[in-house]
Length: 233
Ligand code: BTN
Image: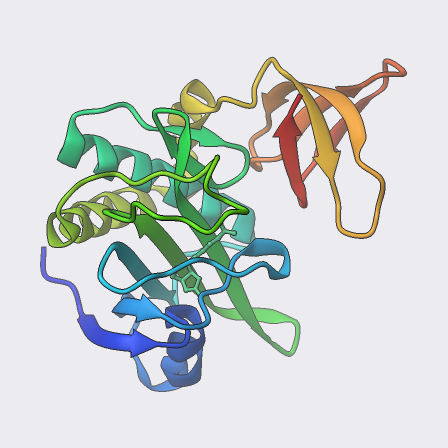
């Protein structure tokens, strides 16, 4: 398949750049950069994006994304797992909601952002950062981060093929079964971490059809978690 891919050298953030140009670009446009000086992660964090050792990319979606950005993030995690497997032959896994793991280390993060106009979701930007050959990570992530160890352009092709294959079937929600099978968070004692709140302990029981985590709290009550993040206890 042919994709509209714009290749860049050093940028602040492919998500930011694509957002600045989104109005004039068609659905499906992809920006890929060699390096990001201001790579952004979820919950206001930064994403370590050293020169040439990672795949830093953003995909512009102007149609067919439905009304729930969480499902697009989940679908993207499935696409990345399948792409990593195509290229390496190794089984990737996912920690809810969007950290893709290979051999227990986080190799990819996903940041999905929506642009709202008059309360309507006008377009979405799916940012994907995959460590392909990074060996030295900053101290705060060196215990948890890893690299896929693969060719960047081969992985880019595989990610785009897998992403648009899955995206064509977003409404069917079929990708959720693959996600559930590969999710390391399920059936574990977890801590739910929400910005500005104390962590809450719970047990991860399942993933519902909106990709929310179904949990049982320590007082026996059930609940749904659809934002923030979890750590496995
Ligand atoms: C996370 O793990 O918190 C999400 C990280 C998302 C990083 C990607 S790299 C390409 C795109 N541009 C950004 O600034 N962020 C995303």
